[in-house]
Image 1 (tube, one colour):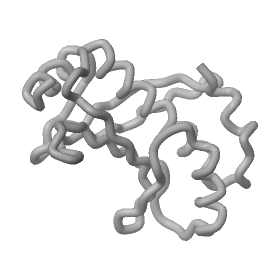
Image 2 (cartoon, rainbow, N blue to C red):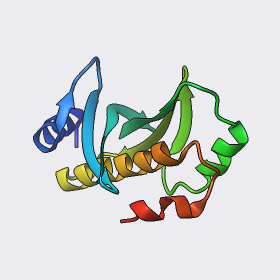
Image 3 (cartoon, helix red, strand yellow):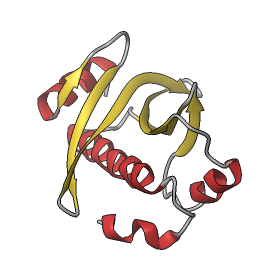
Length: 137
């Protein structure tokens, strides 16, 4: 998919905003009766001259997190990496887009948002693989 096709597909499937050269997608989710909106920003990029889609999603802001705990927590994630920009912790992930379909794009964005939400609700707790069980697919 081209960046233009991705923009159209995401606008058809989700509520999006378009600041600058990226799209921001809001993914509504319910966990244990609580409503959440997980924001996912997507932007076109390249990896070894191949088109990719970079995705980032905020998981924690403000305050200091123990780096060792964050790295241990990272070890339980099935995808992505926890990164820091300013005082905001984000989950970051990327996918190849050359053979991507609209259905696969939507699935990837929602799956990434779910993983970011798992981090968001658990990041300040001790690292525990069981912490993610209630959000399992």
